[in-house]
Image (cartoon, rainbow, N blue to C red):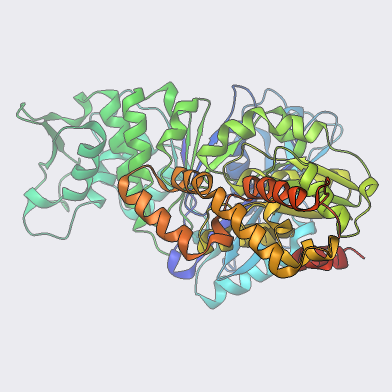
Length: 588
């Protein structure tokens, strides 16, 4: 089944939906779904609640319309008083009785959209309840918990001369196997009304007409739409309008010519073609509406459209501007269509338990799917410091933190080894704050590895935007923090600073091949990459040497020099990290 939901947004006003929060709604006890501003693919097993996301948005919109003042369309009725939604009018929600809308035994549900307008964030939520004595009659709706947000929304829309009824526009597409033969001409208002009544399938020809280019040559009228269809279906389809007098003819007449085949009336085309032209004629129509948010939701394309066409369809949707898209599927294969990072929203019982669904990269999908649950289950309670480290072996980072004065019994160290990006780590930290200890201090450790300065800055921004502290190593890995001549001299005064520098230089040279191997592995295996890697390494050996190897060789040289075992994992002022000290001080 394919369902598309569009909430219009005009990017010149820089509007977007940041998140959707559901509380006690159907299968969700409480969850916040953070959204990518462009394209999201929501994936998870059957019956986990993916389609409930669509239902919640439709219900939010129905609640919003309920409060628009009939006489003053730029004002809302007060949100402290209940208004009523009739049970039978909620045809878009799968339920057999009015209890089905609530999670477990709860009697109140809430749906909240966090909308950002020109960098100003508004919380816009509705509370939903039902009468105690009358069954399957109506739901009581209010927005008393979001009064300030809705008040500010009306102020902004008045400033921009936008009516409340035009702020949200929802379009819902359904699977199409055939269309009506005779389709009358409709004006703009009639098209919008039909769409709002979920009768868009009756309007395909009218929507196609609305996509025509501003050209005097009818042969070029539908170039944009034809190009979209060709990219998805892999062959040329020509759209031919047979009408000569739009004002006086009763029905819209559209023929389709497939390649060199004879043109046929559009109603005779197959369901795959009709589905594609329905979606993209709608997208073109919606994009022509100003001052709206545009969100497209496609629910389970794998159940109605051929698998090859699904990939083409999703790739093409990602090229559309003015859209914030969501694709809901249980098919893991479709995440390969994701063009950018931080687009995958994975839902299963564990992520629902965590209560936060964060967009992450397709590369980290396997990690989130297979590893996240175990990380959450093994979290220790009532710790003050929670360290999220990329190291599989946590012994060195544990020692390093201890040397900074953090009591080991107050620390829980969680390894996110195997996660390629920081996106999969954020939900762990947020779960700790919201479910384990709201006063916990979160530190995310990331080795500088062979990342560029820009890449490290991007990671740091994501971590700090989540409200966490960030620690990156000065060199490739944490062992590099202990490769310091002054540190060695302070621990073993018989080795001068100058001699320590000689031993470090010798160890660095000895491990050059290992350092280059790792650098090339990260940068690529071509001869060009080898040349660039050598240049990069020679330009800053301290930054790019393989610390783990160099530290081991250096330790052996010092032991040989002193004739005894040495312990370099001890405190000196020279191994202190300003980032970690800042983290500790912020926790006091």
